[in-house]
Every structure is written in structure tokens, then in C-alpha cells.
Image (cartoon, rainbow, N blue to C red):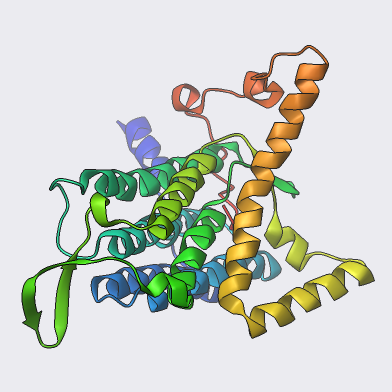
Length: 310
């Protein structure tokens, strides 16, 4: 009986203290994601997309601050992943659905594709985060396997912001449901038959971003680059990029995030072409062959957790 009680005491872990600043930053990540969803509910899509970028800043800083103050641990890692699912999975999907369809509608004719995309994106983000949690190591890395969830959210939200700053996109055909107005709100309904070229491109980019999150395509680690040491030339380039961001943020964000998305595909295409020239299997993945089945083994280092920037 005493052995059983001792075993229960070992398994019951009580968190006595919390790291204040890192936890506040992670909470800021989650709060920003929830605010983005609320903005989507009130047709404030541009503000919601900006809040997702605010969540990215919080997500980028919380892990760095935790390691600087030596307060990193499994609690912060788990809280970070839960926040990322909301901010970089659910929030971008809700914003995208609102932009594509408007209100109302979920399962009616012409709406099911958009419903599928809205569900598919956060599911892929959750799988991406869960896979990263069991694959990560404590050593610094220069690249990710698969598109990081903040990177995918940045792609989606940058296209949402562009929509509100491009005059040619304002002539989007909308089929109004009668003349129903309530406190100066016009409820509009958009079906697949009324989607314009911009929205179809947006659907394709969102779908590709979701797939890239669960892929094995390599993407550079932007966080380590920004917080690491850079040569003088690279620093000048980053300074010029920040200047362009301040001048024309809507165009800069779309170009940079979309190029980041496509860069992984280009790199993977080059790698497959090299394998084809050498007569190797195009689908060969040495890391995949050496990987363990985490879902079966159930072994995970509990003293460590996921790193920010997934």
C-alpha cells in the first residue's frame, strides 16, 4: 500500500511558482489570437490579421526571455503550444473563412469547400505542433522540417491585409441577401460561383500553407537569424527590409511571406532533382527512416519542451 502511495506522489506534480515575464508573453500570444477571432466575428479582418502578427512577436520573445532569465521549463513549453494552436491555427482559419464567405453560411451549396478549408488548416497546424513537440531537441537548429505554424499564419494574414489596401480588389462581386440591414450592417453572402480571382488564389495559398506545415520540406529558422549574430552586410540588408516594411507594409508582408513559403518548395524541388540525377529514390528521407514512432513508444524527455517559432 505504501509503495502505491509513493508511486502516486511521484506522478502528482505540483507547480509552485510561475516564471512571470515569459508567462505574460505567452499569455499575450494567446490573448492576441483570441482577439483576432473576435475581430473576425465583427468583420474587422485587417485588425484581426494584425493581431496574429502581434501574437508572432510574443511567441518569438517568450522562449528567448525564458532562456535569458533561466526560467524555461515544461510548463512554459506546453502553454506555448496551446497558445500557438489558437493564434496560428484557429485564428487565421476563421479570418480566412470570413474573408472568403462573409456571413452567413457553413454547409449550404457552394460553402462546403470553404468549411473544409477552415477546418483543415487548424487541424494541420495542431498536427504540426504535436509533431514538433516530440521531434525537437535542445540543440539550436538553423532550419525546420515543415513550414512553421507562425510562418503559415503570416502568409495567410499578409494576404488578408493586402485585400484592404489594393484598390483593384475592392470590386469583388457580392450577392446580397435582399436588403437586410441591422444597425448599418449589410449581411452579404458569397458562394463559390461569386468568388473572384483573388479569393481563388487566397484559397490555394491557404491550402498549400496548411499542407507545408505537415510536410518534411526544410524551412530556415527566422527567429535564430534575427536574434543571432550577423555580418555587417546582412545587417544592412535587414535594415533596408525594415525600412520597406515601414513604407509599404501590406506589399512587403505579402512578398516576403509568400517567397518564404515558396522557398521551401523550390529547395525541395532542387533536392529531388539532385536525387534523380544520382539515380536515388525521389521520396527517400534519411531522417524519416531513423525516426522513432513517438505515438507507439510514448517516450519523451519531460525535462524539456517545444521551442517557440514552430
